[in-house]
Length: 70
Image 1: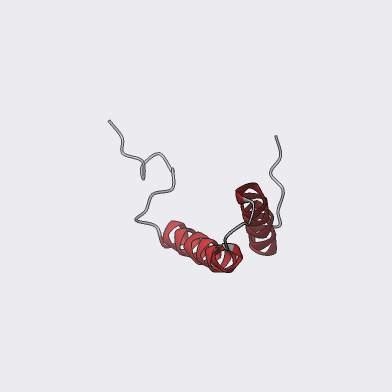
Image 2: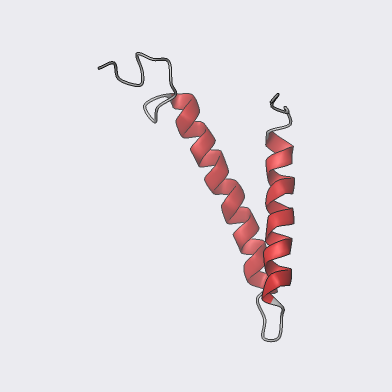
């Protein structure tokens, strides 16, 4: 059987794939740091989750602006 690299599928061995994973990790860490500050007694969990979603979409939008065609 052909392995993934022979089929042209991206693998973790490729620099571009590793870079994207690192960028994603950095984005998530930035968002989590902002959310930790919002975690206080009495704060609505749903509100924190919605804020996290919004912040993450904003971070992703800064980097990945190209829309995929369906």
